[in-house]
Image (cartoon, rainbow, N blue to C red):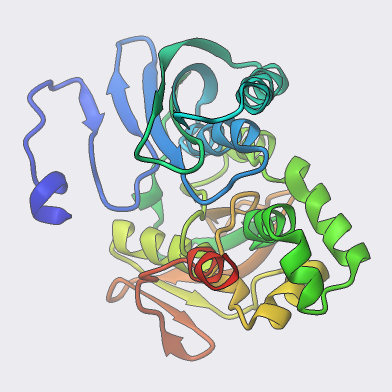
Length: 305
C-alpha cells in the first residue's frame, strides 16, 4: 500500500497526520484544537453489527487522544434483506450512539444485489487539545496492555457460530460467557483516562495483539521487546484451543496497547515489555514477529461456514 496511499502528498498544511502505517486516525490542526477523523468498515461480524460499527470506530478516535463526537454511517444491505432485521441494525446503531454520547449526523444507506450480509462503514470525528499517535513511543518506554487480548474475536465467534462451536465441544456455559463480552469491546473510557500519561496508544484489531504491537514498533521505528505474555481470558483460550487458533493473532478490540515513559506509573494495565532503540521489530517468545497477513477470525469463518 505504500506506493498507492502512504507516499501521496497532502496539500493542506493544517493536516498534521495523513495516511500513515499503523496510525489510527487523521489529524487536522484547527487552531484552538485538533480534529481527529477515522473510518472503519465492519465486514467480519453478523450479529450486533450496528453496535460494533460505532464502538470499533470510537476506539480508534479515543486512542488518538480525542473524545468521539460525530458519526457518518454508510449502511448497505442485501436487496432482499428482511425489514425487521434492518430495523434491528439501525436500533443497534442508535443504542450504541447513546452509550458513547455520539451523534449520528449523516451518511448513506442502500440495498444492493452484490452482497449477502449487511455491511456498515463508520466515519467518526472527535476533537482534542493533544493528539496521540501510534508512532509516539520512545526508547525506554514501558509497553502496557490494558484488558485482555482476543476479546472481540471471542465474542464474534460465540455470537455468529454458537452451534458450530457447540458441535466442536465448546461448553454452552463458555459460549454464553463469551457472548457477554460485547460490553467489554470499548476502550474509550480507558484511553481517555490515561491519554495525558502515554507516549502512544493503539487499538489492536485485525491481526490481534501481535499485529498491533508490530504496527506500533514499525510506526515509531523502534524495537519492541515483549518479555511477559499478553493476558487472555480463559474462555478465549478454551475457544481458541478447540479451533486451533492463535489468540494473539485474533482480532482484539477491547484490548488497549500503550507506551508509557518509564518514570510514569499507570493505575491500570500490565507491563508486558519495553521499547528499545533498534531495528523496528517485535520480539515475542524469543522470535521476531512477521506481519500478520490474515486474522485468525477470517480463516476460521471460512472453515465454519
